[in-house]
Length: 442
Image (cartoon, rainbow, N blue to C red; front, top):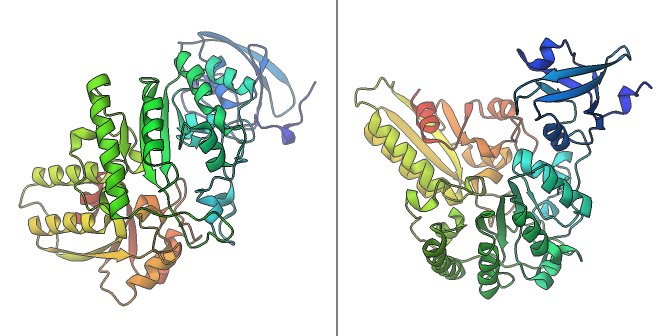
């Protein structure tokens, strides 16, 4: 029976050069029907089924012919296929109404994709997204265990069942810890995130949550704690306080005390506070080794320490007579990172005085001044706040201001459009010291 290709998610979109699929002359536009007689429902199952040394792959060609390929290969050797839908299925959307949800604080008229809230364990495994586990059926849990979906990233926030139900506004939210116990018993690795809200899940509740999660170590590998972000678009949403110097210091004191206990017990600090807490508390960020390999780097945990260490080490490696021409450039950064970026720019200028670097603190007028991270800066704020200032020949920004797979800002302005408006080259820098210094000098 011929499958209607137009209605299928299993359409092959790419064949990797030199792969098994290319050798078998499978083509873009062909359709994956089954692996070992099982219909493939998503990318996790596909990867699991194709890991074996012998598989039977059923393909429907563009002409409608069905072909079964008997394939002998190395264990874990990939076939070299990609599909038009990366997960071969519709992503599961989030049905929660979290009191701190950033997407619920978006204004109207932004990119449509920004309004989609995913809550899909497959995307957690593939892309590092955090999921709440609130929409998990029994079959979903069994699939995670059977297909070894590991590691997965879990938005915990609290292990108090009643409080979690209230924070997430989902009657199933209180089941979290029992699900995590099952996953830990099955050997699944989990990384956890806590969005900390003053007066809600901090203090004794935070202590309880970290303690509960540490009881699942090492399957719960690490916990990142990030402060709640409150924008100016919170109409009809619950009131939330933001952290100040006093409350940030209290949270840091609590977590550092728990870190000491975990370090003695496990040899790991286990729970890590994001850089924002230290900046708000006006407190020195921990040393490089304290981050234990930067397990939660993407959550802004240790980002400043890692980048700063890499910049300093790389500058030390460069000879004083390194070929750098005279020029003026500029950097646009958020309020949180301004002092740090400014200090790094001064180090570069001290070693290479022929380079002048202007660092501009961009106040987040779009979201509201309470949002201070660089990754949420919009193009329109950069345009407005660097107008009339000396930008030099190039303006540098962090890559995190742009969409992960596209050079476009949150306010739907492309990098190319920003360059046209400013009349400047605009260069994104990765959060990596070598890249940061090289782009500025070269």
